[in-house]
Amino acid sequence: MEEERTKEPEIRDCTLFWDYCHDRRWLALLFLLTIGIFLLVAALNHLPGASGLMYGIPLSVFLWGVFAAVDFYHYCRKRSLLSRAMQAPELAASFLAAGNGCAGRMYPEEAFSWNERSLSRLEQAYRTLIEGLCEERETILLDSEKQRKERGDYYLMWAHQIKTPIAAIKLLLEEREDGFPMLQELFKIEQYVEMVLSYLRLESISSDLLLKEYALGQIVKNVVKKFSVLFINSGLKLVLGNLEGIMVLTDEKWFGLALEQILSNSIKYTHMGRISVYMAEDEVRTLVIEDTGIGIRGEDLPRIFERGFTGYNGRLDQKSTGIGLYLTKQVLDHLSIPVRVESVMGSGTKVYLNLEAGLQGSDPGPEAGLQGSGPGLEAGTQKNEAEA
Image (cartoon, rainbow, N blue to C red; front, side, top):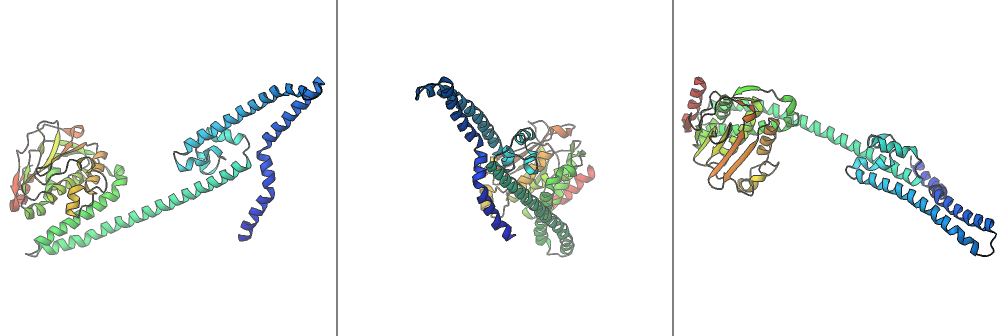
């Protein structure tokens, strides 16, 4: 292989002059035609001296003009194709497409027209180089995608396996009188694991959706019941509006996940007061999750759904990942549920979920149902579930 590589430049050096002549053959032909025109004019006019040669100037200018026009046309085509090629790296070979490799898949009608005429040796060299780079790029992308998939599969397997010891620890702590504080921390670990699983499944969420009508009140109660440990420990008051009789066309698991992330943020940034979940009075079929927490700065509101954005509150907390609300927005977008956030710094936050597209039933007033705080929360939730 090393001998072949050393021989190749030598062969190119030997043929360099002939390649140059091949690429400049039209210019050489034009030069010879110009000389021929002057000789022909001089022979036909039988004029002595240089005066007869003046007749050849207009003919030569016309010939060179035609050549310049044709050459400019081909130049413009190349520039146009190069401009298109700048849109993506793999399009770089389109103006010298050979009809195979990555070049043959771009602009086939233009690639065909370029194949019809012979390329210069220099263009062929550039074409070979660019197609080699395209193939290398495709290989790198395939390898990168394979590694990403394998890494995702590993994290997915890990997240599933870690749930078993978490469930076992939870059972052990429930038997201990002093296990409640540890149950709260274990619940947070469980939520983080669920977030990882949901994040990994987000790419294939469309194939995982099971859309049908669900009772909105039951979904909300199930989510609230999961957070009963945090409500009891924090002493926050929960106010549930009357959501009975309202049906929503959605996916229960993914919609519940979005509600969990919103509720988790409300609990996290509400140190005293209450959290309310109710239907808005002044907006058609809109679910509201309201808290009396620390609020969100106005300049942070437009960016709270961006991946990795933590904002002012996140920098104070030092534990925010900026993934929860991003995940919420992605899920709600797939469920076609618009989300809007209003907040006043120091007064609290309201999250609006517009369920108009998937809701059927009446729109009862807010805060007409369950109320509870502290140790009585779980019992109150169970009571409402029994009545439903």
